[in-house]
Amino acid sequence: MLITIDGPAGAGKSTVAKRLAAMLGFDYLDTGAMYRAVALFGLRQNVDWDKPDALVAIAGQMQFRVEEGRTFVDDEDVSAAVRSADVTEKTRFAANNPTIRAIMVRWQQEVARGKNIVTEGRDQGTAVFPDADCKIYLTATPEERARRRVQEFGQRGENADFAEILRQINRRDRDDMAREVGPLCEPDDATRIVTDGMTIDQVVTELAKICSCVKPRTV
Image 1: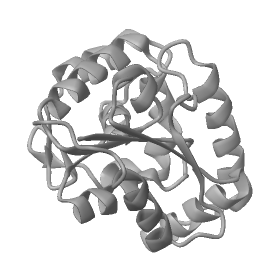
Image 2: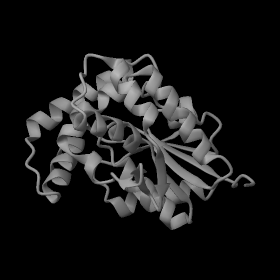
Image 3: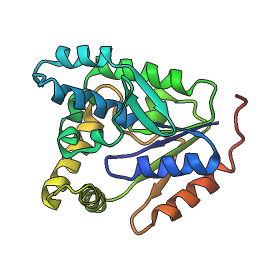
């Protein structure tokens, strides 16, 4: 069974998808971490962000591996490193690059083949897995998402300004919806869940109920 969870930045997709996968005994694929990893290595190599081919070269050399919901690049666990504020700011350069998206989409499809899996991102139920068994569109108001981001940074010991985070989220929403390749959009056949006022446990429980009505595919 293939479950996709799409939605805008800060909607809680990663946390919810990971918990849902654990509840169901499924594999979990954090596709956003892949694009963030490209940005992370771009920062480490002091890439010129105005030269897209330089970032493509970095992406083409990276070897991804997913184990127990964690993302590895060349055997380095980057699951925490890709969540920094600097990486968040630069991820758009990877996500908006058509060549990088093509590389990542092929990798995502290969990972999911023949598995029971929960995968989350911006275009999973549309561009990557249009025939997914169960599609969820998870969202929340920009203000709610900004509050969650600030709290997330605080838990890691990083300071974050609410107004700046809100500005970044609104910009990312516009950029994600406007990009030519893999734009953020709500699949026509997805179930929409607005999570304002809901706890993580409540969201996961609701998604589990939705998925329980879907017959798993044969793997």
